[in-house]
Structure formats: structure tokens, C-alpha cells
Length: 412
Image 1 (cartoon, one colour):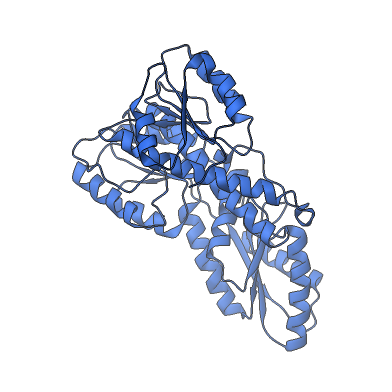
Image 2 (image 1 turned 90 degrees about the vertical axis):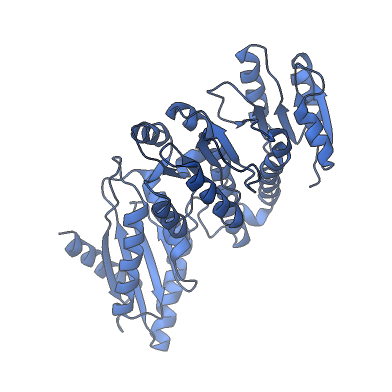
């Protein structure tokens, strides 16, 4: 992978193993420096990525480096080898287990793909045709969802440690985890205690063999008897303490959530800003425009058209966006939807009668109930759903008014 700058290695010791591993990969131009020249090297060389190989100075130096790098665009991946936790939010931990120095190239390649994607988005956002598209500036963790596997006494503590900053879907078995992975998208997997090395080994092998999950951050508690050749560039082995597992996982999860956001922004750019980058659904303006056209064409052709409204009560904003992204992923290509200002989702089902629309709405509701968490831990989402169909004399306003009447009856 070609880079705009070198890989900067910061180390207090000459010839760290990580520098040799990256040089041996023959795809990374590597430059090393010590801590006294680190800040100047970042300014002068404009590196594509930075690896902190060894660190024996004060924590303030690492914090200052993280602050300096965080201000650079496109993002510069900053990886710290065997760091002391907790870390600044933009530093990616890398634990050097057996063979760890050879895995650093894969980890770096994965992080550099995020940099390349960010550079692409920033370049395309300068086009006048994309003036309506904005890259959200809130913490990507607000959009992230983590799959947590675990058993035993540490599971609640780990759930709380992760849940304080991101959405968490828990699984007490590998079978339950597989079901969740097939029904929705995640930004990371955290594996706590309670599983044998054989079970964890089999699960990691399955993840590495599936392109959907291969690049997911996978953070697990220290466990013996595992293979060392998993094709998982974002696999991290952490201390089994809940706070350490969470501290190791969250920077990697944040980066993956940022990548997912960038993909949604690119899709929005591709369609002229008609998609909301946080949800993947149409913006309200685009939705009402397309809805008016769909109603007009349906009345002219005498075809069917159905509309469903999913309303949520007592859930966080993060959960509403999560539900919208799930709906975006599950909808048919011919259908379209939007997340409204009041937190509800309106979906239009083209060429669909009332019975079929009700069946589709029930399926979508079922998935959201099982995968989106409410305000309280372990509280499932339970949306109110109203469905109606276009009548021969309907206008857009009349159809929406009847849909709201149906919603009020469904909620009562």
C-alpha cells in the first residue's frame, strides 16, 4: 500500500523489533526517532502513521503526542506497543504476544486503510456538488455497537465498563454470538472469561475465514492454548480485568466506527447528499420529495404503496440512530425511509399491499427488538408500529395523517 509519508517509529532504544518487522515487510518506508525529537519529526515528516515502540518517559509526553497527532487530517494512526492503560482515545494499543512483531504490519495496514478512506472523504467533500454533505464531528463511539461474549462474575462489570461509552449487545454463548453477528453490524467484539481455549480458538478461526468479520476489532482476555496465525489484524490480547479489557478495546472500536461513518458519508456523496451519514437512510428533505413522487406515480399506475411508522419511547438518541442503521441494512432495494426529527422512522414500501407491508414491518420490528438496546441495561427496544396503504383519492398529507392516526391507535 503506497503512503503519503513514512512510518515514524518512536523509541528510546535503538533498532526496536517493530522497526525491523516493518522494514522487512518492504511496503513501509520507516524512519525512527527518539522522544526528544518526536514532536519535530511529526511536523517535518508528516508521517502516514506513528508507532510508539518503547516508552520510558513521562505520561505527559505521550499525551502531548496524542494531542498533536489528533489535530492532523487525514487521520494519522498512532499505535503504542505494550502501553500502560488507560490511553488517550486516539492511541491504538498493540500487545506483543508471541510473534507480535510480525503482526504489527497487518495491524498497521488495517489502520492505514482508515486513513486512506478519510483522505478520500475529505477530498470529495471539497466538490461543490457535495456542499450539503457534512462529516459528523461527534465521537464515533456514540454510533458504535459492541458484541460482548462472556460468562461468570466479571461479565456484568465488563458490560458496564463498555456500556458507559458505547452500545453493548451481550452473548453468553458462541451460538448466541453467531446469531447476533448474522443479524446486524458491529464495530468490535470483546471476549471475556468463561470459555475454553478450544472454543475461543474455533470462534477466532471462523471470524478470520469470513470477510465480513476479518477486520473487526477482536479483544479477548489472556488465555493460553491459542493459535498464533489468525488472519485478524485487529486481534488484541488484553488483561482479563474488565477495566483493562474495555480500555484496550475502545480505541480500536472507535476507529472501526469512524470507518463505518466514512463509508456512509461516501454513499451520501455518491447520491448527491440525499443520504444521512449517521443513519444511511434518506434525509427528511429527500424522503418527502421521493415520497411525493412515489405517491403521484402510484396513483397514475394504479399500483400498490404502503407506509409504516416506527415510533420509540424512552430510548436514547444513540439507540434511535442504531435502529435507523439496522433498518437501512435490512430494507429492500425498492423501499426507502427516513429518521424524523421526533425520533420516529417512516418507511415506504413500493409495490406492496397492506398484508405484505404488515409482514415486512413485523419482521423489521422483530430484528430491532432483538438487537437494539434501550436506556437501561438489558432493556429491549419495543417500537410502536403503524401501517397504512395508499387509497385512490389520497394526497401525501392525507396518507401521513392516516398513518399518524393508526400510530395513535396502535399505541393506545
